[in-house]
Length: 231
Image (cartoon, rainbow, N blue to C red; front, side, top):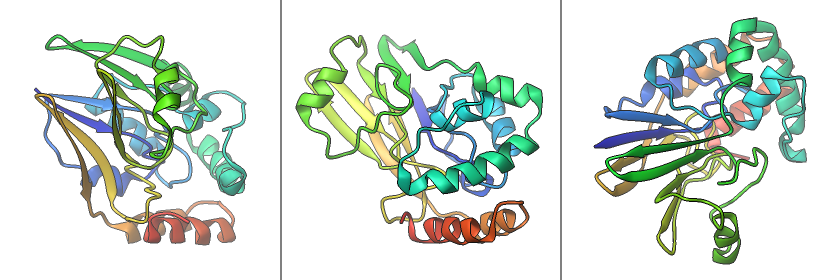
């Protein structure tokens, strides 16, 4: 069995469409929208690909009138993106995002998978970066029953093993922040896990950003993030 795992698409349709990996099942770890210019199309694309989707903090902020909980570094960009995104999404799309589960347990071929955006326990806002200690990860997993845990949120790919549990962050499809400006995703195939990258048409996304009502200074910063793989 082959599973494609995507996360943190952030309205970047060109990046999402560049992920051509064929798989038996697709998992989406949330943050389908915000920052990018094509939130509607990204929602539709994910809906066409899978029903195995969990809610990200930016999805939550679109479906409900709540803050995204972003770090100060990205707060202004997120707020500008939120204003744009909420003006283009309809009620059905906002309700779809709002009603996504926070965590999802899936059993396939006798393997227990757990999907979550921020932390295994369902904290939408918690950052578990690649340098997180084994002790902290072990604490996060203490009430978790799973063989493989997929999380997103940090935009940084990670594969870790804590006792009998494998924790995987596929990185970000739409806004990688590890210095590699390529869509990042993961593939689980018969017990083997791999982080993969694919180039995409960044200029198409930049052109889309320029057609939005986001402030030009925010578009400039977002362009730099896309072209440099972070800031």
